[in-house]
Length: 371
Length: 99
Image (cartoon, rainbow over all chains, first blue to last red; front, side, top):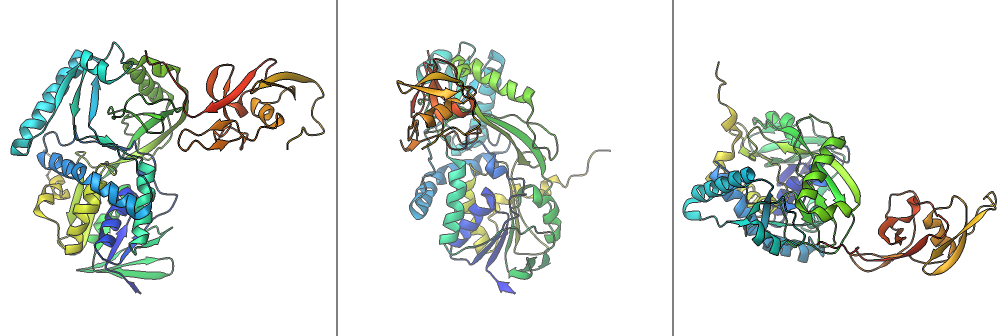
């Protein structure tokens, strides 16, 4: 049996960020990846480091997201230095456009609630009207009533991030094992064994970061992770000159000039097909926001599955029955990469989660339904 | 570097590639016209300003992007050549009037 200090199951953004953090902390880590048959949210995501709407009614989630956003600049610089890969992080704030007065009022109420819930921690935001926005965003459509702005948001090249995390994990001494579909885990307190391709890997720590696969894996370690797929679709335009250096929620332009349009949400199970009516809705809203977008050709489009817990908040847990086993699930693999690598991984290395993560336990779902 | 297959129809049309008139077989794509004009590249990438020429010829690789009759960023392998068509180099990202 090959012994490691930690096994991470899941080679997506969440698993590689945690594996990278563990390896950088000096642990000998095995990263087990399912392979190209996996539902890879990491290859379909939008690439936002997005803070401003995360954690309404759940201040612990707001703080966790903000913590990750704070970690991002140094995290990106460190990854860039150690791998030579530019992740293209731009983090100068972001705006969420509102296309009607009702939308704007809902947004205003939401941002004010976020500020109230932040308490002494603070939450900086501004509501911008059409005229202020028009100065900031060339070619703004008359339909846009206003927007919310916070300084925390940003965006990055999520594929470059994914590549850099894999490369950084390897150069920190991590062992990457591909085509490892895990269906069995032999669990005992601080002793976990997984059979992969004719051999067994063992470690005193195991992190389940297999996205949608966690639903089946968590019970093997005395945990639960009731995640379901939520489909999102994205359209990408041809490259054009730079219009906006900041992300606009469901619209963002890469430094190379491609414009990504997205943010649809559908509950359709494990179906990654694209639907023209959703693509039309995405394009329609984008053209209302910026009429000149209609001139651009769409050159790529895809659908991918978000990893969605029942309340939309991440799940972080440690097993009472099998100490040393952890889960990590979220639908914000880019935004939370900084926290996963720099905050969560060190907790796992030390052997226990900090109490700040207690509200993210899946025990929050163990509430009997009303008869 | 490239020449038509022996079974290519004899009838040709004239198109303009980077200001030069080129005769291509009826049914050829704009990308084929670029290759028959002997050009070693037809675009410069927006990222690193490196040169690219038609490659996959089936609409996948986007290396044949060209300005065709004034329209930027056209996949020239997916556009049929028409008499008098003007095919020009695509330099970096297209420009757009944002109003």
